[in-house]
Structures are given as structure tokens and as C-alpha cells.
Length: 145
Image (cartoon, rainbow, N blue to C red; front, top):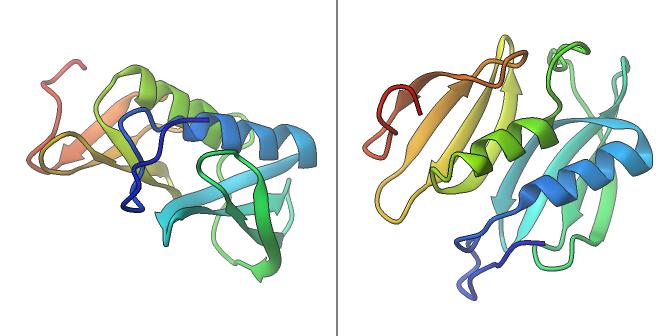
């Protein structure tokens, strides 16, 4: 698992990919969103093709599930032929654009908030190709990155 700063924000090597992939593989769930809040990752994961979901609080240092509770959603789940949340997180991490603080599927794309050393950026990512379609913020990467 990645490093987390003592102040309650993800550290410089925020490897959320590991936690997301673990949930996807262990439970066979589709991760819909994740947000770093109050010192832990809050992950919304749903049964594939279903509306039975759960909110999972994950320790950012160990990747261990702290607690889980049922959660309902009527939102559209990511496309089954697209990249999973862990694959999107890995693609953004590999671009070294900054620390991921939020990742959410909002039909028809993934929205990813990153914090580089300075500023913030919100990336709109294609769910099939994992390419950044658009970026808003002071910390957006140069085109083609």
C-alpha cells in the first residue's frame, strides 16, 4: 500500500490501485467510487450488474477493511467492457500526475481528482481506453500526457 501523510491526506505515492484491485478480486464487486476522507478510503462497491452495494472504509496504510455497511445506489455502474476502477487508478498513477484523492464513475466517464505538489486537477477519463479526455484545474498535465 502507498504512503499516507500523518495529516490525514494521501502521501506522494498513493497506490489506491492495490486496495481497489483487492476488493474487485476478493469480493467480485464493481467499484463505483472512492474518496479519501477522514483518514481512510471510502469505497462504494456494488455486485456486478446489481444494485446491492456497500460502503467500505479502508485503512490507507494497510489496505485492510475497517468497516462495511450496506448502501443503495440508482446511479449507472461503469460499463462491463470498460476498465475497472483499479485499472483507471493504475493508469493515472503511472502518469505521475499527482496523488489521487477521489475517483468516481459518472456516466459516461470516470472523474478523477488528483493533487500534485501544487494545485489540483480534475481529470475526465474514458472508461474504455483510460485516456484523459479533459482536464480542469491549475495542475493539468500538458496535452498528450
